[in-house]
Image 1: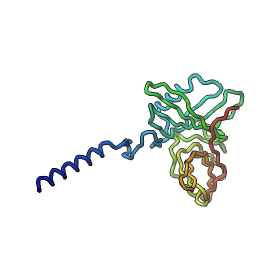
Image 2 (image 1 turned 120 degrees about the vertical axis):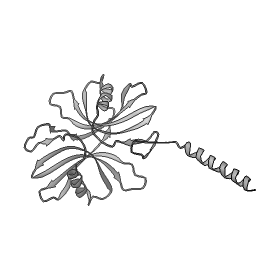
Image 3 (image 1 turned 60 degrees about the horizontal axis):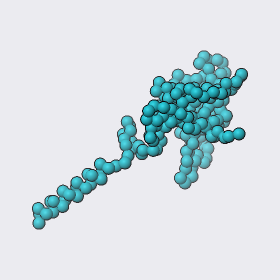
Image 4 (image 1 turned 60 degrees about the vertical axis):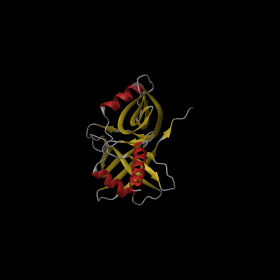
Length: 224
């Protein structure tokens, strides 16, 4: 009887191990579960040479506008890889104003790339690489700083209806205080919420108080 019980117990352990081995999820570099087909947020919004190459391939034959990568937002494993990139979009016209756009690029298994979606915003990109009094200054990297995160948290603390998570710092402006231009992930406080991206302008006064002055959402291009 003891021998029979031992055989049954061993068989149950084998079945359990087999079931664990058939888990349909993968592990990303941070150790968290990644469901195949789902979007995975990047650990750093910094644009790598690989991301630049992917965008260059996808826009090589496009005319009418240029797309400059500003921040890398995430990837999605499909039959290949989808890349989500925040870009500076500039129309090829005289005195054109640049705006922010979220571009999705599909990279197939052979390395061929194409744009599958463009989400436009009305947020103007008026940044410079040089320090100009009263001008917007582009940061060295789009990584969110402790100062900008603190200002955002203070500014949205009394806003109801959604939570705001900083994704990338796009620009700063020194006035009578400091303005921060940030890309945020906005999650409505509702059942089964769908998060979306917004460009949020936060003003931090000299006394440390902060407020949201503008919010720009993104929308898909529509056929005219």
